[in-house]
Length: 318
Image 1 (cartoon, rainbow, N blue to C red):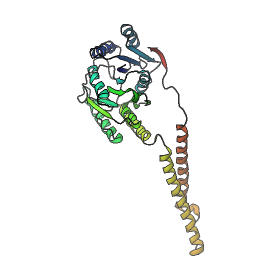
Image 2: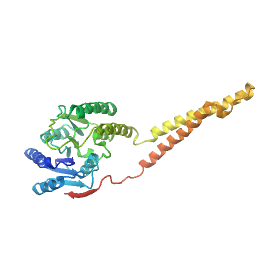
Image 3: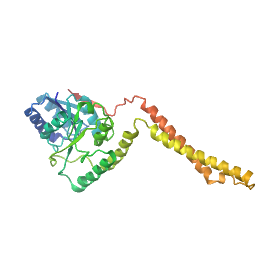
Image 4: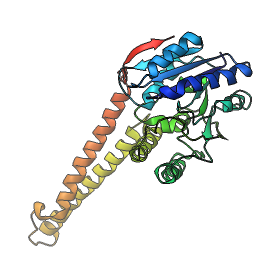
């Protein structure tokens, strides 16, 4: 199969029929073999009913329905597991992404050898205050932190080699940072393509301003994971050892001062507990031990197999 189109959605019943027709028309006219995978992330409208009707009309439609709203990252995770195409596309279901971009994305993956190609909504049709300015700030921070030169990390339309999406774990709210997840797994050839962004035709956006705060916190998390996720002892063990050495040296100085006063200067020495270095020594060694233990526990956790489900599928169409 040439292309899998993975589309997470929440309450987008009005746009699905038009979107499916648009994608099918584009891919068929270019001679692609394909599948369209809808992931209904706990919609409360008629989205699932629309998808079932689409399945009756189009054998290329597949779908997953979550029992509740588990989030876009979990929806993409489920879609990636199901995808079979050589190239896997992701798109939003709100008709703001243009399916006619897909053939060019496919060429960049297959012919130019990119592992991942991200869309760039250079001209946006969103609120300047609600989305444009916060998005520019967010993308600037993501570029500086990740070292990946992309202008639009959060663009919904992206293309991946199959082996990329089969080797990354998208969870939490990490869908914004799939390029960084891919890079941390060794898929470093990442490209970008300017895409046409269209004004929302139906409904309202499902994301508020809080997504940028969440995105910033997730950025810190994924930066840490990409740097030390495989060997947490490298960070916690180093910091723990450093703190313990500081505490040990402080304790050594306390003892040295005590001996000097008693046997060299022949003067009364202050009580050890009256010396500020005593508390420095005590706190440093306690913190150092805790950090070292945190690194050790992190190493142990990495050696366990976490198979807990992060979402519950209620229905599936194949």
